Length: 218
Image 1 (tube, rainbow, N blue to C red):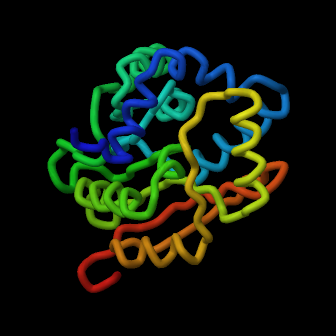
Image 2 (cartoon, rainbow, N blue to C red):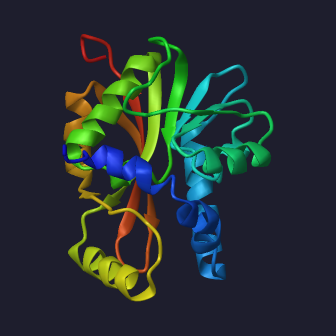
């Protein structure tokens, strides 16, 4: 029997009912978490800078925490349960099943591609694959906006123990330094324009806006 790839495991994990049903409650289960999520949302919206008539694609919309604020947007996810929740939060959003590793949209279809709390679950090979797919569907000069957990061994250790003790849902996290992300993005045809840092109790989340470069690197 062929072993499942990590991307397939990742997609299957977020289709589970126990994950869908507890996603929002776990991420907003305390006043501190609510404040942090509100700040995270603020940073994302500042970097997205969505304008009228811009076509925006959201990858892995999950329960629609970001989708709710994007107005007209195309939002994809592999979980039909998550898509139902997201579409209720934003009736203007086109919430459809989709695989961010195999986007079925035509090349140069979108002005911006955004992904919140998704690409931090990807090892480098899969992260590069997702970035390439985003680049293909972006128009000339388009942008990607996404986040990644900054490298911090203490946070990695504590998060592992916390998940084991409290049995919370959540797929494995991969950490990257800002320099590593700059290198990956440059090699995949992007240049970082702006960054924000969301502080955790220990460690930080890096939120990035990167511009698609042309063949000449401009």
